[in-house]
Length: 225
Image 1 (cartoon, rainbow, N blue to C red):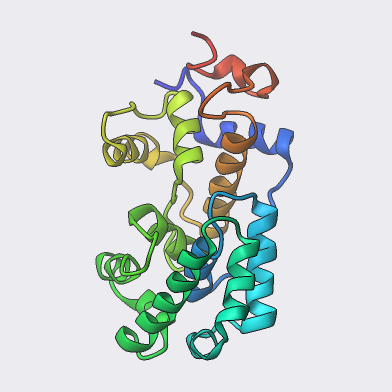
Image 2: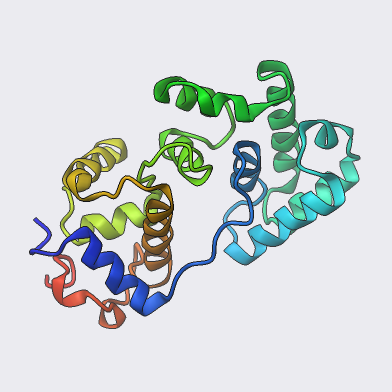
């Protein structure tokens, strides 16, 4: 159990400490797929810089990516960390998939039923169930609390759900534990996603978490051990 801590109280405590996280500079389905793939194992600042270069130097439509020179695509991918050559191929694959399987318009898949929309988005590199749900949330299509690894870790440590051997099972456990506490509002859920991710990256790290700096450590099951 979460030691009596509600989901809303946790978020308020995190926001008081971290402030309101900045919004992502992209809100379209294709833009979010590109955002997830334009950089690898790098900082949020570097990812934003790589995406900005893609937008300015190449463009973010599938047509512009396919028409771009290898040199321009490599410059974008190199800014986003290692390995750039592989990401150049990934960006081209994304553009080809949008053209061949979605007639150049990935946004249309957002109107599909949930399971079909997720299946369509999972055709792209690096997009699993959590990634597909993040796209549906950040496009304000579906009010789903999409969790990535940092946010999942934070909620597990605070006692929302139980960690399982399988990542997907842990994910389901957390979602089941907080289901009745979630707002039916995409913008509020985006705030939750961003705050949980930020806390996991800055304080509630996988190794050597800075529990002494956590604003709600007194209510944390992990910190009390």
